[in-house]
Image (cartoon, helix red, strand yellow):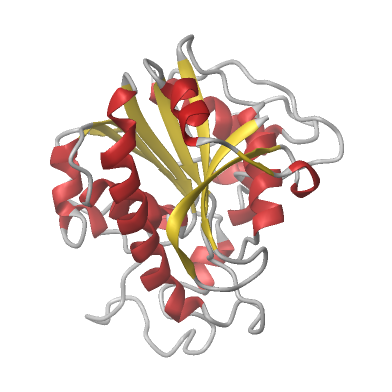
Length: 290
């Protein structure tokens, strides 16, 4: 079963926990706590990949999408996947609390960093990947870490495109290599970012307060010296915000690990097969993890 660090206090909605919970599951029905010593034994001497889901994902959906996606990864030997469950959803507002969630994501990162600093020094290395607003969770975590990070991969980042040279500039010096995966066809990030649907269209491109999303246009200049290109998914693939960690009823194919992101006009991977999108994002992270 997939291992998780859980910083939720409730299955749906609710605030941030005060301590990090350890668990394993493939779905909410077999969710079970894990003893600290048992958990640490599973990561000792291993290259750990910690992966965060995004905004508006409850505990059940977080477990489902991350455990499904773990099965599509092609990590090298002596590697361990660990999912990060955090309260990026609302029990009452159905996503309208987006403006408050960046603070929750940042605070989740502080809590996780404290736990990792205390216990994860036994791992051979630690790396991170994220989807959507989970970018803030992993960047905040890295910013507060006292241990080095080997890789960081930000998929569909719901965060300002200049975050790596402003708010989280210090992260670059703590990570060996940083990667981004973005799509110009991500309508969630193009239409609802950064201020949400409340003020969509009031602030337009070119306004000094306006920033594009990292997961829509990619990173702003200047790029960190340790940034790995390319990062743009071909426009003709019509890759949308929910595709990265989606779950299909028909099992997704396991795709060959790509050496690069293909250029615009390239044929879709496993064209016509169900689930090729999450298979591609898993293959991308697999190659950037190596």
